[in-house]
Image 1 (cartoon, rainbow, N blue to C red):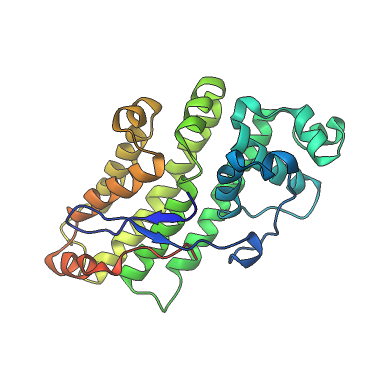
Image 2: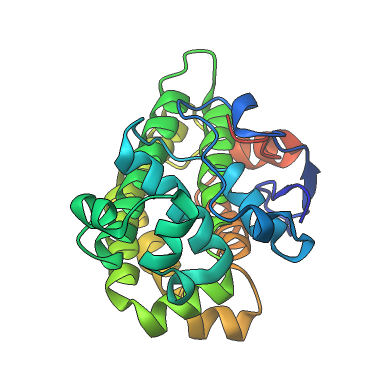
Length: 269
């Protein structure tokens, strides 16, 4: 997967459009630097490039100190070798750091990945907040920006990663679900309210109920069993399910506006 795939929101079946991703973290609009490579030989091998690339295209805000370095390196190993393949010994060797130093910041592998989940959530909230606060974006522009961000980060949850977490770290799966439960009502609710104001979303919709419906729908569709049955990635499920969800909420004007192709999401801001 050399580029992002984003799905325009239409009342008709979605059609994917290839987009050009940022070439490196240095060129993407986020406040963090390119993380150190945890395993240069592994990353250089062609078979492991894509997992690492996805993470570099979806950076997380981390501090400049030792804890940030640890999380940045762990994130790349986690992408490449999954939760079960991430070891404190391997992380220490990749960083040139003692395990004692790592444990001083993170008492366990579970705590380390939990901190990474929280940092990812904070980054998504910051980036989404910037899109929603942009006075130059109308409803369609905000929707595009929000979906581009959320879809990009969901692209990190590959089916093998989801399955590995379900087997070896169900507590991390619970943390990811809790992150969705905190963020989805705020983000989707604000987007829909903006759509009502713009006359593009129906004003007879109970927005809290619609948001709860969407939250429970995506939770069910993102289980390993559902992903296996539908033969889709979490990102593809999100894109296709949201297209169906939004189509039921739009006014005629909203369907005409968003069906014109405006919602083919750009690369995440």
